[in-house]
Image (cartoon, rainbow, N blue to C red; front, top):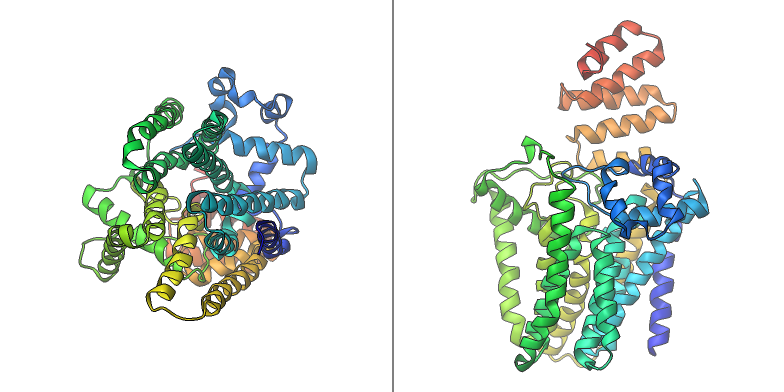
Amino acid sequence: MTKKLQIIILIVVSFLMYSNTLKNPFIWDDKGIIEDLNKPEYQKHLKNPFFFLTPSYWKEYTKFHDVDAYVPVSPIRILSLNIDYKIWGNKTTGYHLTNIFIHIANVILVYLLIISIFGSQKLAFFSALIFSVHPMHTESINWIKNRIDMIATFFMMLSFLFFVRFEKEKKNFWFYIVSIISFFFALLSKEISVTLVGVIIAYAIYFVPKENWEKTSLLVIPYFIMSIIYFVVTQIMLKKGLNIPAISRLDIYTNVLLVFKTIAYYIKLLIFPFRFNLDRDIDLPKFLFEPGMIFSTIAVFVSLWAVYYFYKKNKVISFFILWFFITISPVSNIIYLAPRPIAEQRLYLSSIGYSAILVSLIYYIYEFFRFNKEIFVKIIIYGVSCVFFISGFIRNFDWQDEARLWESVVKTSPFNARAWVNYGEAYYLKGEIEKSRECFEKALDIAPDFAMANRGLAFYYFKKGDAQKAIFYFRKSGDVN
């Protein structure tokens, strides 16, 4: 199969899997973001597309962007949404089309990168195929605001690809320049892009001859300096004076256990990507020897041991396990991400590693046992791809209706009060106010003092004309003294 044909197949498969998202509505946070796009301060991005590169943009950043402890600093996302808004207005099809195109571009970059590093068309095609259809990507691609992870991945992959090309050929210095520029745009997309520094260092250790390590280390310095500068600007200067909520402050022991538990949770989601949940939660671990922590600790240490074990036996597997740990580390609750401690969108970049590991592991077993016919390996890979494709395609339908989406959440997390409130709000906006009341009351059964649930019931009773009860619940929500 030629490279051209493989790329065409990857494009077609990627587009088909998400073709049923084109008419999906704006969901949850999308609505507020799209409404903001028509504000004059946001339109500055369109009048001068490179406004975000100017000092005045960063000086005025907090005037027209939400800035808190959890919101990523992402001018590239805002720029992309502005361009979509200029073309499509409030028509959701265009925004979804952009997300699909970004995903397709990333699939092609995965293909090209693996060929550049390993020279294996077979490994590149099958890895890119698994990546293209992995069901955990449905959150990133359906949820307009979550294109942030795809954009960051695009510029990271582009930067890494040109770095590898320059390191291998050492002829065209423009490859290195393009890599640096792409990394700059990656940083402007999402802070997780700083992990590229770790990925490049790992690449050098694995695939660059030792006699060239000194020269290669010099090439890494600009990426390292840019990362430090961007961290200082976005996390210290822009967010100066912001307080991290008390709920996010964990003692060191609990925090370390939580990191292990989070990483193990993400490993499970990559391997068994079938129980979808928009609003996942994770119980804080109390001690090392509770059942969940024992499994998590074993999973993490076995994975780390595999990095060492496969280093000499199969560097592809070893390198991409390391890729997973490097890229997942910033979102592994090292700093407790209290509002959404677990999110499927955060697996987008790390799943590149999983895809290559899965394909390489299947071929490793095939070669280890010296099976005669490679066709069985291909059947397994195509079979997994088909299962992933069908699972993700079906999941896309949940995003066609907000009530249906939140129904899927409360089925998976029945004790999630926020999910019940959002479920109730979805029914309220559809005019099904009795169903909304049931959802708000369910939320209060779980969390009696939950302001959002009390506010929801206040609006319900206001709609029903019961002013006394409406005022009662408004007071409970804290909206009325």
